[in-house]
Length: 178
Image 1 (tube, rainbow, N blue to C red):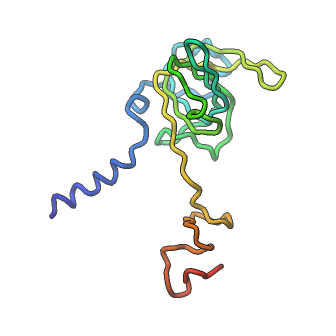
Image 2 (cartoon, rainbow, N blue to C red):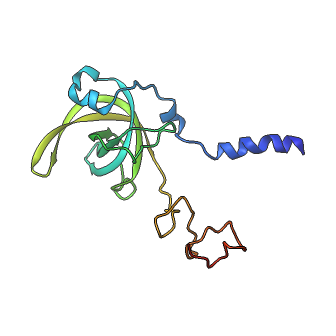
Image 3 (cartoon, helix red, strand yellow):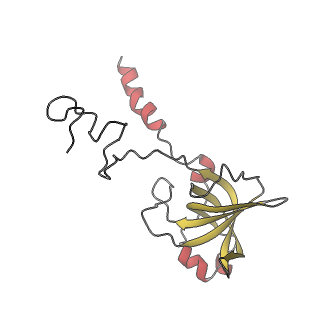
């Protein structure tokens, strides 16, 4: 029985794995978007690990270009959406990126090298944005909103009318509203 108990924490923690090894173990220098956007040529061919939210995907004949709004990454490699987005960058890959899978507003983490910059049109303005040649791409799963319908949190909402479901009976009965 004790060996099973020793394996239990390992099994539980292995289900919480973050990035795949291709991205998590990829060599990367710590360069922020603002540093790189001022002088892209100084960081050419530098390995980076960046993330953000997908803006648009364009498929060309031999490559796919994905426009991403940059957000800094947290300890697990996921974009920190509660912080301010710093700007756009473009990810170039030889793989086909299906626009339905890599759709707008999905979170993504990319490992690759800085290939220079590229022109993009935003509205009527043409801007220069960093171009990242991807070696690995990780699309983060979307999670349902577990906050209750009043905006209070972090109370999971499982379809019951505004109560925290782990407190059954007593003053926290199933139909008690605060």
